[in-house]
Length: 512
Image (cartoon, rainbow, N blue to C red):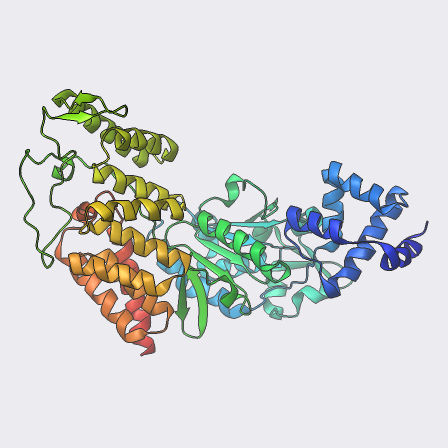
């Protein structure tokens, strides 16, 4: 059967739902309404190539043949692009964002990722701009990578040959400087620029991304997500956000900004432009200070709501050293000094696992500790922190509430609950939790910082300025190396937070 006949038959009788679902799962693209015709035509073309005249037979082929599925995907991928598209964001990146990041990345090149690069016009545009600004130092200062699901367009990008349609946003002087004619209205980008960009075939919905995509400082993800349904948009944006290095920036197309304001990255306004920035994550550092020491039996903390600080020492257990406590089966068990030491050693091991990012091992050890001593709040707080760091928000939420049921003055629990509610999008509850943390300890700069971030996102500039200024004042009073000690088991890179506060304040005051 000819392709035209197949197309006519398909529009009359065939249910496209299985094909739509398969393509949605495999590449994230949605083919509803106006895109159904393109899907029908592409299926018919591939069926004609294989001499298949039964649609269920072709669907079965797609299920078992990944190469054929990729061929169909490539037919359906829209690859409309050109050099220096939406130049305002590119200028923002080169003139402002990169100089900021360069100061913190002296040990390695700045990594720039073009996600959904199509035939390469975007990453090559970046390479030309950087060459103009930094000259031959570009090779040392920057590493540029373009990725796309379509192997045909990636192959075309590597060749770097373009027709006149790709140059409609480009100055003639750049065309003369960086391209060579290779035919009628055809030009190839020169080796200097072509060698500055590395290309890979990558499905953004794939389970693992290649090494070349890891820890980018800038991600250009522009005019790609418009082809994805909302759940796929959120999933890919989340994955790309996780790739970003601390303080890294993610730029989307002008029409896509609002759809990605998920609370995962901070939305930043620079003049009339918006982009997303990654706030440094909470990290773990080994603590061998008094915050894990024992309080002698019988000693009680003297707490005032106005002066409480979580640096106050908490006991591993409230039992006296030789007190008998019930075992799981109800029989008495001696709580000896050896068992106390054992729990402390296990807790040290959990801290070390957390420091090494061995989350599963740390959680297993903490569960063992909590099973032995359900009153050990530091172990629970550390478990909550770990669960929070791996985005298990429901479990982290439950354990924080468990801690507060025993100790209503636990600053760490309020702080973590605020972070969880912010991630969930429950902004009013998040603000309430951060305010509770500030009430417990007015020097809790993390609570001030996150409150300011929420106000910044809500365009409440006055309160955002106040929050950032308070956080900076607190951070400036104490040596940087001591920051984070008071937030055990949460430890943060205070220098990076201070940088963000000052950067946001400069933007707010400039615009005010």
